[in-house]
Amino acid sequence: MEIHTDTESEHPKKPQKFYQVLYVQVIAAIVLGILLGHFYPDVGTSLKPLGDAFIKLVKMIIAPVIFLTVVTGISGMTHMASVGRVAGKAMLYFLTFSTLALLVGMTVANLVQPGKGLNIDPATLKTDKITEYAQKAHDASIVDFLMNILPTTILSPLTSGDILQVLFVAVFFGLSLAAIGEKGKPIVDLLNNLTAPVFHLVGMLMKFAPIGAFGAMAFTIGKYGIDSIGNLFMLILTFYFTALFFVLVILGAVARYNGFSIIDLIRYIKDELWLVLGTSSSEAALPSLMRKMEKAGCEKSVVGLVVPTGYSFNLDGTNIYMTMAALFIAQACNIDLSLQDQFLLLLVAMISSKGAAGVTGAGFITLAATLSVVPAVPVAGMALILGIDRFMSECRALTNFVGNACATIVVARWDNALDKEQLDRTLKKHQSVPQDSVHDKFHRTLILSGFCLLKIA
Image (spheres, rainbow, N blue to C red):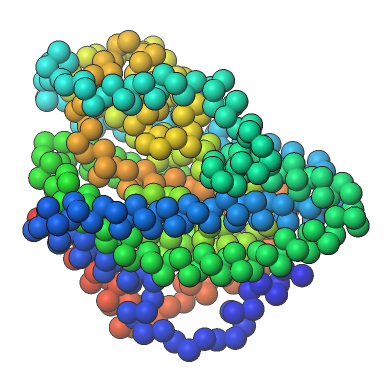
């Protein structure tokens, strides 16, 4: 019985001091990182290893978490067709909302026109730094992407850490365990028992999150500087607004239709969101998200299939960024794209966003792949946004993360694999924190401080 895994909610813990709460520590670390990076940029830049080390620590545990969750979830399914059904519904959801995200980015870019008036001559743009991304984009064809899903050996995904390879092996191993029935029960029991210490290890690693967030944020501000935003601030502002609109209005409507509130969901995963913001990596919070989706009432098999797959195929934030950035470059270079050119851009972006999925720096690589196929917009124009890409990566990661959390609940509901009462209890429990508590006041103060620093520093 999975109800046993959520017993901590039945036995109230001793209230934590506000400084002991993970997301408060992460917020404080982000603010301190901004201050240090701005006033002592050399010191801030030197702290990059702190952020990199934390992300490596989390990536170390991602493969075991996915493998155990998927195998134990699928091995408990009574019908093999259930796996294909869940995967099919998930891919339908991903395709629909990824395309919608591309359309939203394109529409807003046409309405706001953030690049208009820059009057850039493409011939004057430096292309040295773009060459690397263009080469990666060239190498990331759809065939190569699909071939890369097939692992070298059955154990190699657990050491390489490739999410889709881990998922591939886990699905088939889970199916084989389910097929042999009672003979596979000892192995299933062993894997179920192994799940507890692995997730406890995740909790231990999360205690290092403030250090990782501090190092990553200090490096970002120290290396690129808030001043580097300059006249490209309009693009950043437009992108953040569009992503917020997509999450609150579009995903909000989907959530309401499926019986929950997107605001309640965001509040429930706030610890993970602050971690994503601090590290600019949604992978840093993947193991914790999978655990929380299970506790919210989604069946383990659905969580195991939807969350890891969504990290490669459900990149709402990245898709908004791609069409918006492409049109920004065209506008900045005074290139008038026809409606036909824009729909070609949309079509190519739909394909390239899947071809380079899961690659480090996927947002920039998929943009390079898209522009290399659409000759009307110069690839060299990417040099315009290279300096501010880091400031946009946080928003891409946050939007992708919320999109995958929402997708997991929706697909679980579509497949009758959602305990709606447990979902309501879980989300409402996190909604009922007293608004005037010292804890909440401290939270609001830090948020305001962080945004003020970003605006006026």
